[in-house]
Image (cartoon, rainbow, N blue to C red; front, top):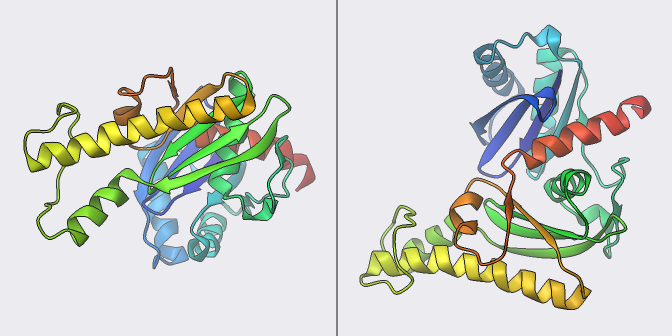
Length: 257
């Protein structure tokens, strides 16, 4: 079994399995001040919950967009399993050509999502990941990552509104609102749900115009399902996209590391 960690700013997604069809998955809250020992304890508890023995772990891989945690988690995984984890970077063998100005600046999560998508879905494609930030990644029919876009995430936007606008409250996301809100809370909900859906639709249209081709569109991330149900384009929801990508990258590199 492979232990795969997708480290984000809000959550750490933990996957354990050999393939996406044989996988356990859970989430830990990201604590940027957590120590190696603390994370080893939390990971051990999660593995115990899934009835997975540390001795069953044959290898480990980490994708992180939180550099200050990468070292702590690398040590935690080694403490727990005795295995040194593979850390995703732009120069690993992924099968993806990164055709942007400076490949080393492409986030590990965006690499992993693109790799998973191009191995499972028709090219060219777009991947939208709705997390702390909303990201878009474009992969062409030659398996080249052409670039993309980074936008403010849904919860990040809501927090900014309630923090910076005195008369706007903290609200829960609710999809039952109509586009034309009749009160402040429903207006905020409309803006966040339909506004993000329209943004995604608009980006797809503009990318297809720029490429001159139709895209396969995949969405992942905690709030993706909520938003894409209001999009006008056909969008495939893949909850496990990044864990799939981590497992693919691990097996492509295991013979070289």
